[in-house]
Amino acid sequence: MKKKHSRFILYTALFLALCLLPSLGLAVLGPSPLLANESAVRTPALQNRDGSFNRSVLTDVSNYVERRFAFRPLLVSARSLLYEKLLGSSAEPQVLLGREGELFYASTLNDYCGIGLSDGELRQIAAHLREIQDTLEGQGKTFLFTVAPNKNSLIPEAMPGRFSENLDSSNYRRLLPFLEEAGVNTVDLHRLLAGRTDLYYRSDSHWTAEGAALAADTLLEALGRSSDFTDGPFAKQGVHTGDLYRMLYPTGKGREAETVYIPGFSHETEADPRNGDAVTIRSSSAAGEGSLYCLRDSFGNALYPYLAEAFSTAEFSRSADYSLEAFSGIEADTVLLEIVERNLGRLLPGQGAAS
Image 1: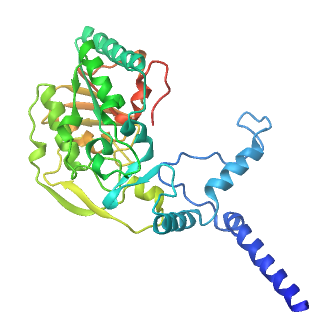
Image 2 (image 1 turned 180 degrees about the horizontal axis):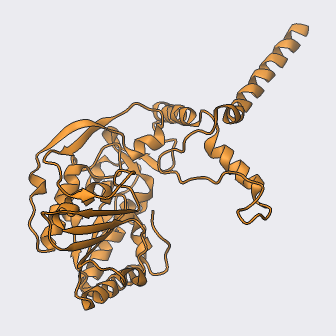
């Protein structure tokens, strides 16, 4: 009896130690890094910046420990592996496991299944874009709008079979007639990229350098310029870790080949410590002509070097303010608005900024 009692105490102590290990590790080893696509979490403090008492300090502590406890990346990776191997599903709500190793952003599921904005809301978006276009054209500027496709809009056959595809009713497909009716200058990248399985990374939600080059050539052609970036050549050099893979396996070693535009670029770019992901990037090109202002999202990371090459000066912004006022002070003679398909709803007047 005494032996069983001792064993119970030992097991209980081990269990409690394992439960406390992440929190104790946070205190000893410091916070774990944030995972892919996670925003910063507030560091707990008793006082606010103005010196007043922080009434949310307990909530801040809870959120901080939840996101930064020790060994979190390792535990997240282990959990994802168990889900994939035992259940055949994703442990991360934001990621869908597709066929043949393809990963998809779960936020694209509504578009894929034809669940989205009403016709009235889509008409509002088209009218808002036309208002932006009229304002800019009234200042002698050129405006162009384009939508970067969700990956599953181009290769629906790689999606999990449990979801019913209804892309004909997606926001983008239903928005196109309203854009045409409103007379918004638009480039349809969906038609251009459809069916090309090689233009997006398998472990990522974004296009490759080759996909971005094809988009850039098409956009520049619509702006009356000629370019041949699509001719490349391109090569597989180095390794790429997809954003969706990092969300599932922050400590994983899975990689795919990085697609590289071999000729390189001659434009000069102001400091961009985030490798294309900075809020503002400014460039200059001796070979380019005119000026460009591009309001873009993460798809602009691979796209902007091609566009920068074609303009004498360019500014690429991730401020994602789609209000009419945001376009009133632009000095460039050409304005491009690029947004990914899954975020179309953020173009509705009064919506917050996109990420």
